[in-house]
Image (cartoon, rainbow, N blue to C red; front, top):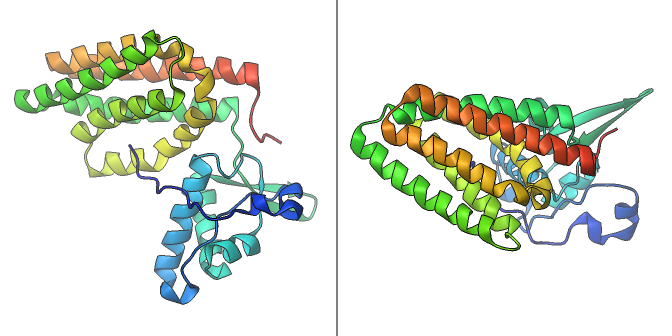
Length: 265
């Protein structure tokens, strides 16, 4: 799975009624003093914490981001916070909302069109990785296939349950995809994947409870991917992954159409 640091457990802004009622996104504080970090470390630390909170839905889509509040809660000055927010905006995690002369930063909303685009991008990246994984030597492919079959069997067991555990489904599905990506992707492809996949992860996490009915279909699509990798067929592996993500985008689209977008203006 792409690296996202676990969210801090300390008190968030949501526990302050006045700020929470104003629609300010909760941000967890830091226990370390600002002087404990150099500027570069402070930027990286602020970026990692904020991205983790956004991906996990702990900063709600559409919620307002106030630079001074984040600076206070993360225990760093406003300069590294501003740099971290600029990077997050470039990557699509944060958006600017223009209202007349007022400009606000908000957590990027979750929308149908954005989900479709993200899933198709991730699908293309992972399809390239699967193609390369299918070209690996037989011994490497056999080890990969064994691991993928183990993970998919876990998903199949959950699909047979009366009430599949959404978080367990999420973890196994992420591990399945990460396994063949890690086996086939080179450093450039892996860097692109690690940058974009967490944005798709936001959707999967927040809508996962409504996606568990499709686990059996995902298991069948995963089995097609595994069969292509076992056969050492690059074209079939690439096509199977593209199909899986294209269908996943359609399934998520139906869920969003039913439940609505999150944080959309």
